[in-house]
Length: 626
Image (tube, rainbow, N blue to C red; front, side, top):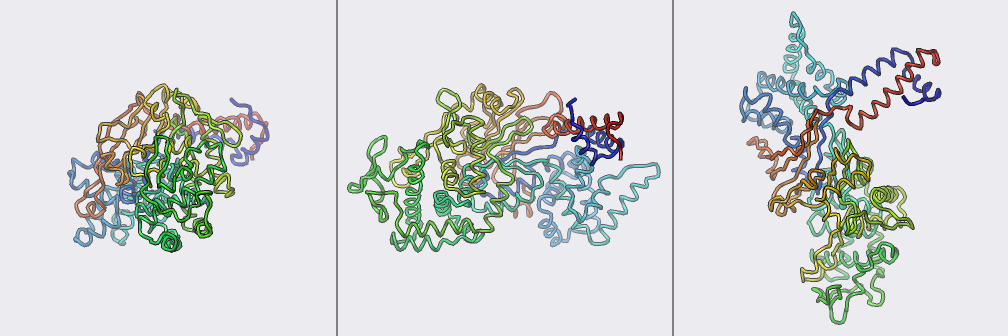
């Protein structure tokens, strides 16, 4: 037992002032340790795909349907099971449909309430009553708590009490509100913790609505992805990040997100493009933004030679007279000769109009309260990586060398590699948001696309893709990590680096779409590493052939669900369609895992140890009970 100071025990005694209080808490905590561990869900690369991800949150990656089938399929059949699930996923919408179809009789409402109660009771079995009560919507917590804890007795008093509760709910016209509350409780109990392994932003059109939904989740964490880093840098005021966000938004037709949700007008940009480039068409806006981006990025690279990115100083490689560019592979023609703002003698200098535009958008991004609300949430719940219950979660990569060792990267006069590199990145990201200093803001851009950034893991060829038509120049070299991620020894080395058990631990990785349609497996390194980017975003589904993955970690093992495309809420409500998923058990535990086996369990064990020391002090008389 640890040696606790008298001062510490006296402080603990303020909360547990008697032997009875200390014993009661020890009993409570030891009992909690014997409960099964909660179910964790891991998803990544959401990319603003609100509709599909919202459905995944509502159907708990198909787990709700599995539970409903187990409980009710023999009694009511598959079709009615799916109807019940539709009600749980979208209770208000489904109730409206049923009302229009005149299917909400008192007996029908009572039947639904009874089935929802049965499902919630089953799901609540792995939690304490206190935890379950905390997940209940406040307005109906008393009613739900009573419904969930009915016990049989000799004279069936509890059953009569239960029946009266249900009858009264229906008679008072409260059934629909209780159904909504019970549905919310069921979803919260089905998934104890949700891990978002990066990339909420870009590609899809509705990251703001997606963030609104994620902010309602009771237990969530985020491992920042490269696209999240880009938006975090933009919101903090990095000009290079801001103009990259603007370019991507224009390229993917997502400018409504900026203008309607975040109040960032594109008018200054379009007016600049018309004045300087003669047009504000999509293609010309793209070119104007690219040119500004090349300048801003070049300024960063020149300020930080230690980034090792001099090879990406592309504007000084252009032969403006012959309209060609000199790349490492040779000289290539450019697909445009329109460079009205570039002085060949000083190509990275901004014109007066460009400086004014940059200042305007830095202010717009930093002053958007709607954007700040979302970014604050991402910072509060996010980190570069997370060690959780023996698993290591990160979005991008652990930069490595060609011989499979951790790459050593120099920043601020110090060398970093492996865990220390990710820890340093975490500090920089938080400093950029808190302090807005130029060095940290520059580093945010580097983290988005730098050669040895743990968020990126590849050398961006934005310039080549924008102005060189020869696609052979577009290939972006990847960090050696992506050659070694199928090597079990490399995965074990990474787990040890982060202080995790290489025998029982796993790495959970996003960032790189898995080409499932070509037979690529998301399971790497003999089951030590999982790549869970399956293409929630429609832009990637042609590559992956599926519509996203969910990795499920419960008390029995690990299973991977691959999802098929979501056809929309209307199809759920009209036809009881669901997002179909294929499930594969990737690991089964020899014994069931309990809270005692988790990080939370370790914390509880330390609390029990301290309470036992306090109890001993009470019994010996060293500390007096109050």
